[in-house]
Every structure is written in C-alpha cells, then in structure tokens.
Image (cartoon, rainbow, N blue to C red; front, side):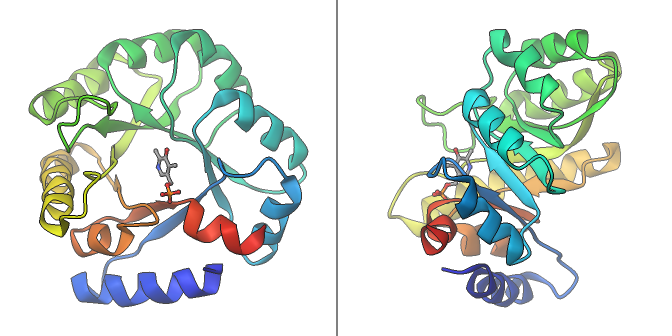
Length: 219
Ligand SMILES: *Cc1c(COP(=O)(O)O)cnc(C)c1O
C-alpha cells in the first residue's frame, strides 16, 4: 500500500471513531536497509520513521541525516545500548517497559527526551512491555522522579490473533490506561500495525506504526 492509500484507510477508520481524532503515522523501517526506499517514502510526504534495533537505526539515521526526519525508537532497548541510542538524538523512545529502564535513560542524558511507556496488553509472555496492572503507577512514579523522561503517553502491540475480539480487547485495555493518564499529560496512544491499525484507530489510537504493508510498495 502506498502512503496515499494508507492515509485513505486511516481517514475512513478515524471517522468511524470521531471526526476530532487525528492519527499520526510512523513508518517502521525494519524490513529494509536501503536508504533509497526510505527516501522515496520521504518524497511521498512521510516524516516520522520508527526502528526497533539501535544498530540498524544508526545506519539509517546517518544515511538520511540531511533529511528532516523524526526518528522513533520502538524496540526492546538493552541498557548497554542506551548511550548509542541517545547519540542518535531520537525524537521519541516509545518502548519504556520498566521503571528501571527509565531510570537508566534518565541518568545518561541531561536533556529531557520524549518517551512512551510500553504496555503488554495481550498478556503474551513473549511480548515486552509492562503489566497493565502496574502501568499507571509506574507512569506516575517516572513522572515524579525522573526529570529527563518526558512522558507523552502509551504504546502497545495488539494481541497476535485471528480473533478480532481479542485484538480489540487489548487495544481497549490500553486506551483505558491512556485515559487515566490524560490528566497527567498523556497525549499519545500509539497502537496499531499493518494487520490491525483500523481496529486500533476505532479503539482510539492516535499514532499507528506501519511497517510491512507500507514499505513493500516502496521497495
Ligand atoms: C515491526 C513493528 C511494527 C510494524 O509492524 P508491521 O506489522 O510490519 O506493520 C510496529 N511496532 C513495533 C514495536 C514493531 O516491532
């Protein structure tokens, strides 16, 4: 799907939720190492890109450094990669999955960085992200104690399933946490990928992360 085709589907889905909902698109780049692919996407108008490995992000950031791209880190961040990631000056880190990780990032930077907490909304043990039960408390604790972690909201990966109800349920659970955090400055609810972004938007997502379905058209 091209960016225009994606935007049309996003537009239809958001109107099913609310005419006031604005949905941002993050193009996930993990399926290509060819900067030309990303340049074509940029030329079509895409400005926010997401990557889930620090090493791969480094190569892409450097190859495209002349372009005004917003880089989002969306993967599992190992503590020994924090410095390397911070050097790339990411626009946002979407995958804060524990207080300890936030603490480690807070210590290694002296300027606030935008972050989302990642919630394991599916309960699948192989997935990263914090238990929904502790998400609100952890968010508030980070906000209170770690001045360099500029919390902006939540991120989740939906349940991996053919059962639309189960997928919807995981998004609904995340949206409820987002709502509880709105009074504390949460603005971003990042959920929805190639296979489930329309369901995510219907459940209130205002940031989708699209890889495969988008990148394929630009390869
Ligand atoms: C890969 C990935 C995506 C994009 O997934 P697609 O199914 O390729 O759209 C989104 N979010 C995260 C955290 C990912 O790792």
